[in-house]
Image 1 (cartoon, rainbow, N blue to C red):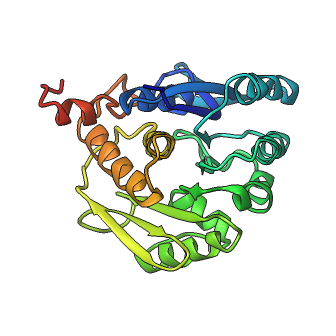
Image 2: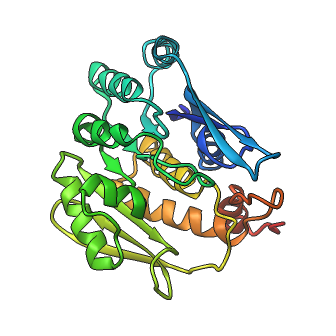
Length: 275
């Protein structure tokens, strides 16, 4: 059997719960071989309330990493995460076009948990105008969807639906606006739009702050399922189940952060005890 392969073009989360670390764990859990192209390094300061510092990788180094994978090996799907500069957005887009990649998941990361504002406002413009037209699936959270759609703060499911439509208009084939537990709703709510039909996807909501890396994990699960040949709708459905179990069994690393549990979905399917 040929192992399916996926590439994550994203940042490194030193604490291990988000970024490429979350992507690789998710790929592995879903039976896909993961490869990486590092865009930024994120460090957290334990002496300053876990303040996030972001260090972009030189664009030439990122290009060599991407070439290693795309020219030297090949992939069945690719996802992007944190792209810390407009130059990195431009490069990722150019490589997607150069290699005519088909299964492209864009997680339009604009902010780190623990940070107070978007990394760079100009990145939103670059994502909107340069990268999103080449995305198979975009997975913005409420904040990101509000910025990308230029609607501002999204406060209802109707707002999420409108934002999904606007983002789709940029050329993205499918859009998932992640409401999660941020809306005042009894369930965790996401909106899925395929250009014709809006679907509200709901799952159990958990009262927890241990959700570090949830967005990365969700988009990585979609990427993994697309690599295995799933339809976009089925890939999103699996990702929704995967992240629900990961959050259900999330845990604390320290007093500042708690990641999701990437093994929970597999262990539940196999009837294993989940710690």
